[in-house]
Length: 260
Image (cartoon, rainbow, N blue to C red):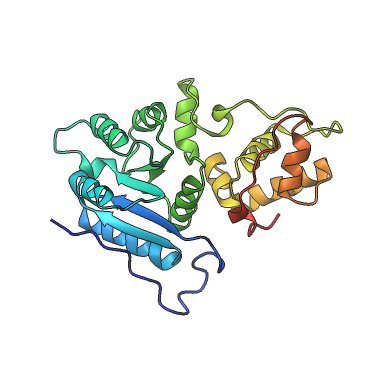
């Protein structure tokens, strides 16, 4: 049995462009994956990209349970559902077992394919994210931080599939469109979609991933929202968009590094 281990720490002066700015809060994560190559590669890659992410690994559900019983309290758990499903087994049954085992701990499921029912069942079970292995480390890093901070992450292909099924799974499906901004500012449908995600505290990168647009396009929409609302920054835009008397949505400090 492969023993759990922390991801390799980032060397001093690591690769240019990797990791968030100094000062990011430390996050403990647990990666549950039966496949050694993907388990070790993902944990090491996340640790090298963002040294403040401390990723421990487990090769089986039993090993993960033993770690939890021993006092390990991760802020988020990532599970490769397909790798944990035995040959001839049912992926959804494995997902239900995992959701039950980690009840109360934010769970993100890794999907190696486009299983049409997996994200739908994940939402029904209260799973906080569904991360396809086709995305890069930058998106995976954002997803882990977002879920650990109380958010949800479901990429746009999954959301489109869920919306066609009439299920709420995040994005526009996670709640009603924001009310008309005070002052009568008119926003396009896409800007309202971006504004909803700003309210949820999502970064430009995550917004782009969920809407199927480039990060630069997401930034353009954010700037357009700021101009339309007469806001100086993202937090002020969200405050102005919701009518007085409604609870003001919290904008996470972790997103302050995003340029408007």
